[in-house]
Image 1 (tube, chains in turn cyan, yellow):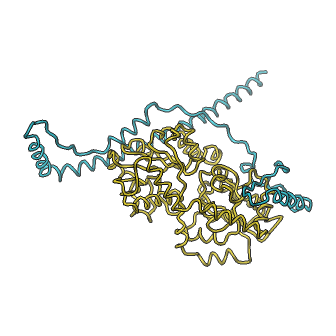
Image 2 (cartoon, rainbow over the protein chains, first blue to last red; image 1 turned 45 degrees about the horizontal axis):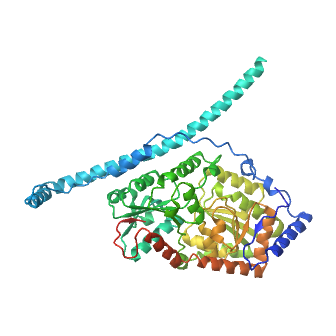
Image 3 (cartoon, helix red, strand yellow; image 1 turned 60 degrees about the vertical axis):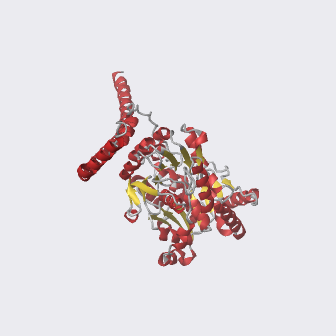
Length: 168
Length: 365
């Protein structure tokens, strides 16, 4: 720890930052001289919490399955089933044709087909969600595999060095 | 829409506040979430129910992104109506390296996914710090903006105080430091403990540090416990775990100083809460913290533990300094007044032609 680097920032213009900095510095110097601080807190606790601990090296980004995200987005979009609206190209009587079809739909299929559409939409949603979760899992595993590959390469390299040393 | 709706969670509160304000202006709004706390089950719809809205071109989906959520991302990408992203920031993965492989990879995937959301109609950061990250990720700068998090002050006003807890915390005139947030490596709880250890050892032994927030990484928790033991702090450091809103209010009421050593924050709601409870703030200059504080509070730039502990002592001991810092914090808090944030919300939504009373339906706030 760099003991002489001042680390406080006061941005309120109505406060005298320089005077406060002096008070802090003087207070630290006085307590340090009196031996009030004891052992360095930066050295306490496990190595993993030390201020300058070395992190494992970062790993390269794994390659992505091309088009996966787009396909999943399309699947979500297409998964919800809607009842088609009735239209007719028949001139003049087209409106009547549409009305009859709507009436027939109301009488014959509404109470039976609509729940099935709902069930199928639910199945589609769950399937898309599952695939999406699997895609997320795959991305995480791909990253994991890259890390393991890097470790294997490092171990192989060390082994090769040891073997070369033994031969010599 | 958000990954999860949980009482007390800052993103969940923000979602609920936006939803309430849209409704109050006559817009039809619904909340969707992948995980829903039982207390909110009546108010929040399961995420899969959003499918029924996805085709509607006259609806708006507001997606809160602060944690990678695979289905939520797909819904957002596939939605046919207007799409608004509210970015709460994703913790850089390297903070979890060596602590939790799962969290590290989840953050990594979350960050890598951000550019894939850039095609939306409006992208809002909860801070300028977050907005800049959106632009760096490839979002069109003209389509970005800043919408700070709502701090619903009435939430604290209406909550009861936990009297037995308050009495216990205030007994013996103990000086209470608090730090609030998930117990995670990016929050550098170890630095808060070290700063407190100096204060406790060299300045005021009648003091305690209260670490308030959920503990969910056993490796990190064990290391922090070992640090507390090694520093001989024993009962002077308390990890409360996740607490109720009423207990959180009580801890703030009992506190004398708010200490925040986090390396990475996208906004930092506890700073606003500390301003509200008139707690002087001593926080690391990192992430969006300097922006949220502006000229309020006191920042430290590196863990010069002895200097920071000495500064904490001044904030606690010098009544004039303390009252000046609190006064400036009060001024800063006014900048985040809910009415102002709401005005900004409408101004930003106005870019998409959405205004109070406009015929918007099915908003996924």
